[in-house]
Image (cartoon, rainbow, N blue to C red; front, side, top):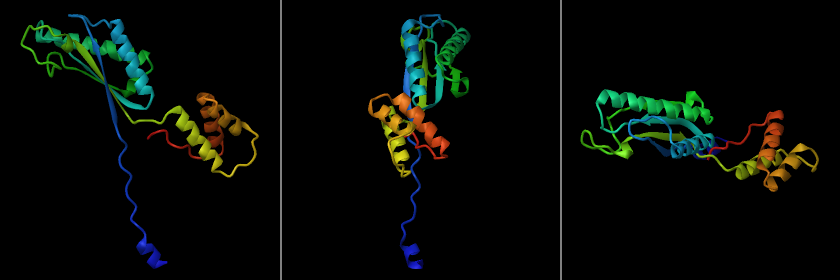
Length: 193
């Protein structure tokens, strides 16, 4: 037994989870903080990305160098607040949002004073998260977990849920399989890759 214990390979620590960052940029008209339709589309994309495994959303507002610094700082703050509120309306919890406003500082495109630049009239949304498996793969992982419990027979909610997964109705299959496994006090497989 001692020899066998000495010959065992040391356990390797699992690598830290891979962080995924996706950038979405919302542009504004000169001197404005109202969200334009294309900006709302970017916000909706960012919120959808967050819902697929996001952990945090960074919101950073900018203003170009037209006007004075104080006005531009206030303008970038108003833009940041508009985007943050829109993200929350789209389902991103406030606790996941980290925001800040930079005014004319750290501009995406450095320019001289009083030079209008569309790329600087923006709010950058960075969604940080971990990649998650698709609904199809997660449904299959839940089915494997249930099958590993030496279940027999094709009766009951779990086999029906597996059939739902096989038919492409993943939401229904996942919901039932998660419930069945949880009721049996079985740890669910992770969705994170």
